[in-house]
Image (cartoon, rainbow, N blue to C red; front, side):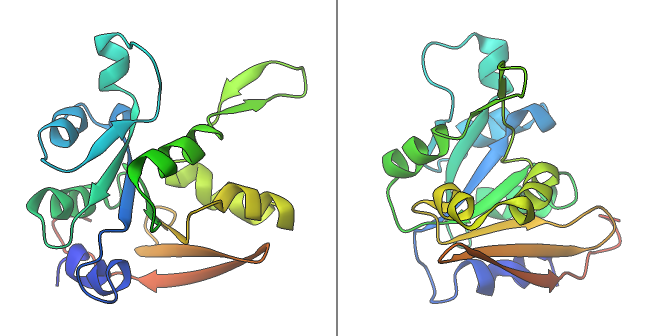
Length: 182
């Protein structure tokens, strides 16, 4: 069974609902920018303004996933184990979700300098979320109902996080990874 087939029921539990999103980190693989822009899936860059071509090609993009769509399947199948991004269940439009996600792009370091917060990277998000205080969890989630990401390399599972009134709930979903991916 493919990775997509294993998570399909978790990502779309009631059938075809248009509320599953992925933040795709185009900086992780040079093929991703084209995969996103030519996918036919609704998408927007998380960065604002006029971007240079190299920055466009390495930026994070919010992409609306569609159940059983070939581009969606490819992003899930090829991205698993490669930290291509994180998945979001949110029953809001792209403008609302993008606006919320943009509020978390910068963080202030102890020395006062601002830095880019690459929260969409599963290697960052799965470590960051458990450190959050209840008000931080609630603020981070905003309109998002669930966050999904791959677990640490070689663990072969997805992690799901939910905000339960500031209490972070975590679920582990083991994945059987086909031999060609390992």
